[in-house]
Length: 149
Image (cartoon, rainbow, N blue to C red; front, side, top):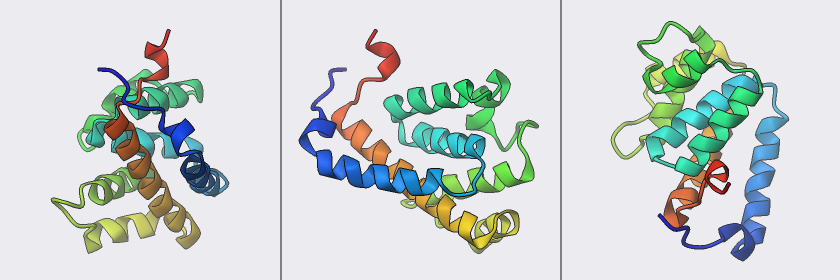
């Protein structure tokens, strides 16, 4: 597939605003490896090849194991994830699939039990932000960096 446009160049102010959201999340106390798992899972659900490529590479560079990266798409069945990671991944899936599901009280409670209120707020922003990035990447058919040579 051919990239449709360079949205970063054409909508630089929007990219700057999105980067501000990313900075907020990055400066939160959420564990960085957990953030990459959340970003990877949302990107898988949304079919954003650019973001799947980027966040799996970022997670790997940060020390994430191949076994855990390969199992993110089947995290519910895999033994590799902590209770906190499972709560974050469940929340990510629910908040990403809003057209077919809701963020149930049970999923919210599980997340609230595993995160402080500021961390939970950062998780909400993290999931919303990666979903916005995914929509831009899919709509414009962003080419993954690893495919550019």
